[in-house]
Image (cartoon, rainbow, N blue to C red; front, side, top):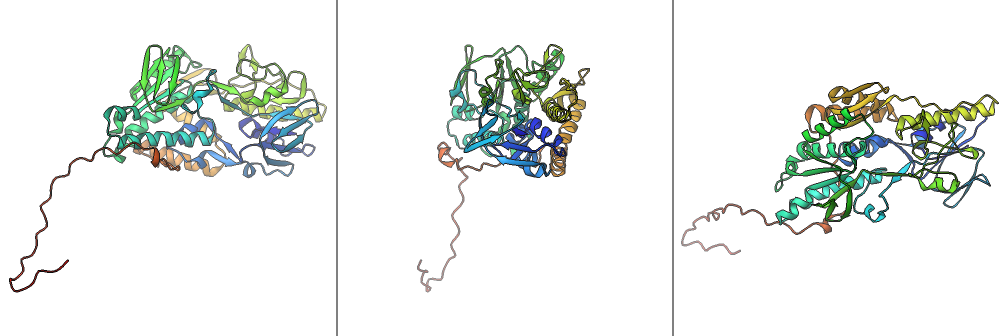
Length: 442
């Protein structure tokens, strides 16, 4: 069995098959670590470190029947039953495609360089450095108008990623950064959240969507709904008849399935996901399973959400299906058990739905969100560090922030602003020497 992708779904499938004596598992990923994607925005806003939300795949999968390969998958040859990777091929009896999603810029790929999205650790570090560099540039900027541009941040897309990123960034500018700068007041930074749909968190009930918007505004985030972006460049964002001058644009809008699934040559939906069968197989390919963000699964006429719990349930179901097939047992269709979903807005602010029944907001929702995320983290060390850091941040409003710029950006900084005039100091007094004593020679 070959599993492509060690995200939530792929990792669960590999762990569930780890004790199967009659299965040999090969896990293929282009990175050597499993990533807890829901907390990427906290790395991007300098709250958590990269190691706090990731773990090496080899340290998680210790079973003797499991092999881990660092490789980038290029395509699937379903006829020959091989996975084509960079530099070779890997044959399979059963294949699990769990490669996740990438960013979708709605037919504007040129926007990717201007407005980075948030899917990997590299993305999070890139965004963190872009945010911190903007404040460093504002500190040096002699032109007040340019300074305002550097201190204006626009986030496109008000789904969970955009909302969480906007709230964390607004909190950062008002609590973590003010003491760090002398020429600028970071509390005057402008955070703008743009959403093309009529409300934020559109997948949530309307009352929770309105609560989230109110919480964002309490954190001084400017929320603009019904704002379809028509153009953006390195110095501005345009939507409708309005243009916002900004040097920092972040992308939290559309997603698209990994392009690997196109090589399966099966029906895809508009987002590029495979329209899977009830057994989570690709249509016409009973030995190819597709799970997680690349699977378009439905239950009771509704799509299964692209969230971590759903991917994990899919991974466990595929593992059980494999074992049942080998044991000649009846196969069961996948059933998604909705345990709920939450979105955090800021310190003590969150909204969520629990077990598709109870709607929560405010501090209770934030506490449930924090507990669930700590429970799902890989490894005791990560759980402990994140819990301690959140506790310290919650009670001090500061936190053990990771405000690091690891690339040399000094050459891209604007000219230095004129230094304020320091008060003149009297010249140092010189001791009087006797007339007979010659003055010292310097």
